[in-house]
Amino acid sequence: MIKDKNNDLGLLILRFAVGALMLLHGISKIGSLGMIEGILASKGLPTAMAYGVYITEIIAPLLILIGYRTRLSSLVYVSGCIFAFLLVHTHDFFALNDHGGWKIELLGLYTLGAVALFFTGGGKYATSTSNRWD
Image (cartoon, rainbow, N blue to C red):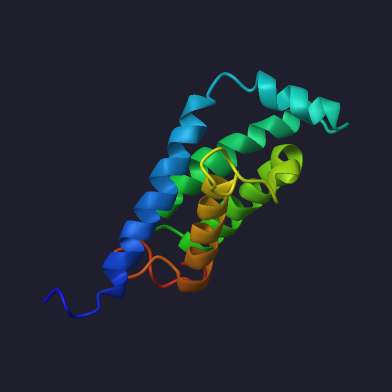
C-alpha cells in the first residue's frame, strides 16, 4: 500500500536522481575538458587531473544508477563535488542567486544526496547488496 514505508523504492529514486542528473553533466564534458584544464592550470594543478571528471561525473554516477558499490561510488562522487566546489564555487558558498536561492544549490543537492547514499547504501533494488561498500 501507498501508506506503507518503502525505503528501498525511495533509495532507488534517490539513486536515479543523483546518478542520472550528474551523468548528464559528465556526458556534456566528453571531449571538452579545456575549460577544466584551464581552471586547474590557473590553480597550479596538473591539467591531467581534468580526466577525473570522467570518473566522478560518468563512472561513479553510472555505478550509483545501477546500484553497484553504491556507498563507494557515492564517496567518489562526493569527492568530485567537493573538488568542483573548491576549484570553482568557493566564492558562491554564502551567495544567493537572482531568485533568492542558494547560488550553489544544485551542487549542494548533488553532494548531500550522494552523502545520504553513502550512509544508506543502494537498497534492495541495487544490482549488488551484499558487499560492505553496497
